[in-house]
Length: 492
Image (cartoon, rainbow, N blue to C red):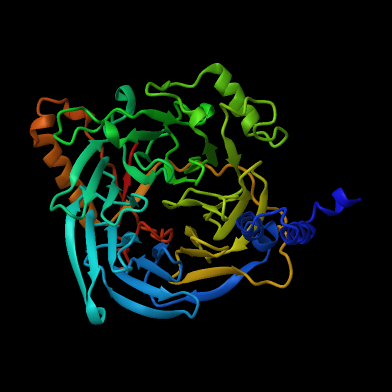
């Protein structure tokens, strides 16, 4: 009877309190068990809406203490919030010329040092001075959009960026110039029309900050070890130490990756467009020389993988097949993915349907679906210390979620479980951004390192006048440039 009662999270909480009082459970483990309780996840509700931006909010991030939130938007502004009260602590122009894609506090900087990247390709450093004055400087520029940056854990100086030019750059704020580490290339000349991988995501392993992963417009996540880089530039650092990809997606040129995240246990979370989310452990890596085509065994596994009658990892080797998370839709925008809970007990993602999805990390069970946006939810950020979420999307506000609901939520009926129809890897370009892409292509053609290469290997641009620009995306369009004259840039 006792075991039956313990299946509910509330009864488990009572037992945890009893064990804590008897000294059978340490204070730290008690806090973790209580903080990661499923009961709290089921009671998440909107605590407050932060509504001061005048465009889609593309990035939200907490400071180390968790009391301040920084956000960036299509309006090119950065806002620092006291998220509990909803009051703006500071609001200023980022210095970018286009949509801000990511903004983060540098650690141990008294929340006065912020780094950003944006659709204009710029990487900028903003310092908050006395009396709210700000000083912003451009550190470097990508040839194309710069979607994400990653800060070395615990470092107030070092961070990385990646962009659609395939370039990964290393920054040390103590020096004047960035280091161009590598340009991410396709495997064995595949996708000859796409000689470089358009990078959308970068993440650093918190347990081993020497390791960082990047991913973008193909099916592979690439893991690099910064210790293998010779800072005098005498070695070829472009070879990853490991690759990750679900077996059934190897050789699939219709998918790409929009989001990456490392857990505190060094697990790697990967979100695919027009597909699902997968969790990898180090043992699931394909090594430095991965296969480039799908085997017949993998094809058979793919059929089982997409069958609702065959739960993931049921009859397969758990050491080689990643855990899968289904239910959301990721086709329209560059969506992030994240862990949630004091020990990363849960996986969270936004969706094209405007909802937030939360799964148990272990087993992949979907336990919560929340209405987060009228259109699309792109960003989900976990609080560093407690069960609080910040979310944003196409709407101009940020929603703060806390476990305050009196009643526990239940899953809605008829949640879409089928894989959405693939639309191809496509992103929207304004005419100004299109010209930047063309100029970047011309510079690459005339650069010494590319002289003599076959021009047919260059990126093909297919321009299509978008007469019906209704399908806007939070990280893709600028309010000032989202007219009917926008173009589509397709990697075909």
